[in-house]
Image 1 (cartoon, rainbow, N blue to C red):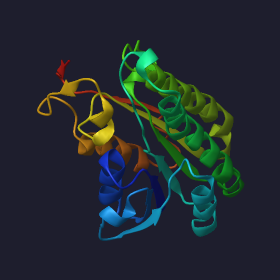
Image 2: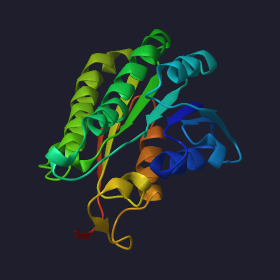
Image 3: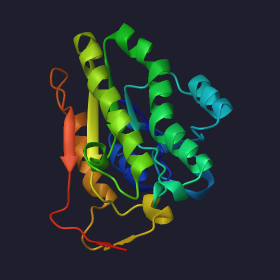
Image 4: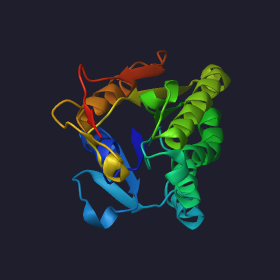
Length: 221
């Protein structure tokens, strides 16, 4: 099976690429490919917000069997303190790029009657998000998109999976106005287990909506 992992150079994406490479042909796409190396993973530099990079991705990677959308960007704080450029970066990374890349590969999946689209969302998609209003809106958008897409494509044998982690120990919070207790939050590998669970189901079973939460968590302002 051929798997394309977007956002594969750090965090959840890197953990997914590492785990899946044990049994599958994995292509990892991300911005910092010069900083990472994994046996069994072919890395392609791709900034999903750069249209020339994305077009090159389409040229170099024909339609894979599985696409994992794990690219992510977040800025936190009172909304009036978030710049327009930061809002645009979140919308492009977290919402628009998964939608557009899906738009490119989906016709090929439907034509061959197989494929699996996995979107890493967030528990913020279903909650009120003070100090993260724009990020939460983007994740709510990708959740709505995935739910609608599932109904559109389920009769074509293309799978859609939405995985929504809670606080996870990744670089996503490097721009946060709070800190987390790393002993209490999820690890990237915890989320990867949910991805593997969905990927390894038989062709007639789709694991659609998975929420992954730690038993406890702690945020410090």
